[in-house]
Each structure stands twice: as structure tokens, then as C-alpha cells.
Image 1 (cartoon, helix red, strand yellow):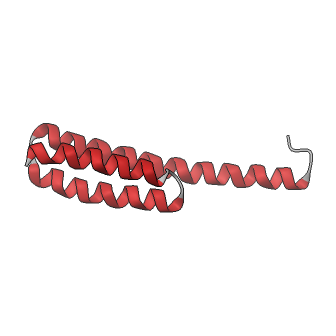
Image 2: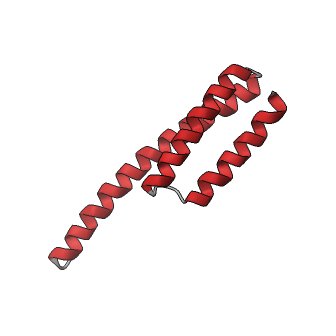
Length: 87
């Protein structure tokens, strides 16, 4: 329990941001699973479409601060490398 009004406000803000970030991260995980499944199934068209959506979601998450920009860039690079052998 917060001892001051400012600590209570920070706690509320922290909880709200954590909830928002967890929603974004859950969406990212779902996009990544779809992409990996398309690669595993050998479905090139679905993989390319999934890659485009995944890159967009990673960029948005980095812009909002849910993940670090370098982490987003690293993941985009990894997924692009995964896409090339399938092509």
C-alpha cells in the first residue's frame, strides 16, 4: 500500500502501463507463432504475409516502448533470415 498520494498515482500508472504492454506483447507472440507455423508448413505466401504483419507489430511495439528498438530490429533480422531459406 502506498504511503503518499504521489506513490499511489505512480502505482496506478505502473499497473495501467503494465496491462497495456502485456497486451502488446501477447499480440507479438501470436504473430510470431503464426509466422513460425507458416515457415514450418512451407507455406511461402502465408509466411511473407505473416512477416509483413510481424514487422509492423514489432515496429509499433518499439515505438510505444513495450520492447526496446534494438530488440525489435534483432527479431526482424532473425525472422527475415528464417524467411530466406523458405523462398
